[in-house]
Image 1 (cartoon, rainbow, N blue to C red):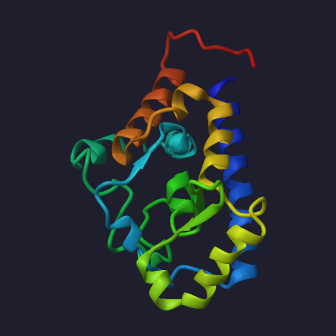
Image 2 (spheres, rainbow, N blue to C red):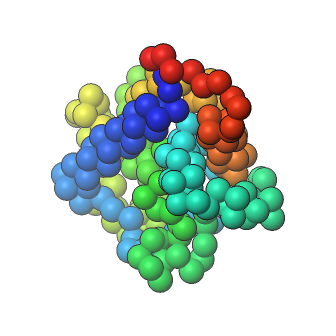
Length: 200
């Protein structure tokens, strides 16, 4: 699959997920606290490079790849996500400098489900939501038992990304390393003198 088609395919997965999460929020009342960025304030977030292919494409289109790579060079590869900014909330972007192009883990955290040993979807949510909207969280947990085929499973969305490009999806890396690899994939695609694959 060509790079441009990978970008479109990942964007489609994210649009479907956003719709899925909006439906879940509507049905359960579960939602993040307004402009909360507590989940961004972690240094152990891992992601796959494919999650940030749309971000890489956006940076290229806006001519900001070099500027962003400098930012990555000055960040800790295993520290806070390079996209995290304590000031981003002032622009309505929660804690993210590019909220629209955030990764899968950023979209699912707090709202995603994993299968427990009995194969039942189990909600993985955050302490703040448990404390501030316990009834909604309880309802969301119940949904995992009553309508297991309708809840957003980490596994299902990860497999959709895997089907787009296994090599970019298989590894979970520190988030800044995943972002860098996504940008490197883009650089290889657009590098002058490189013969690019054009088949599907």
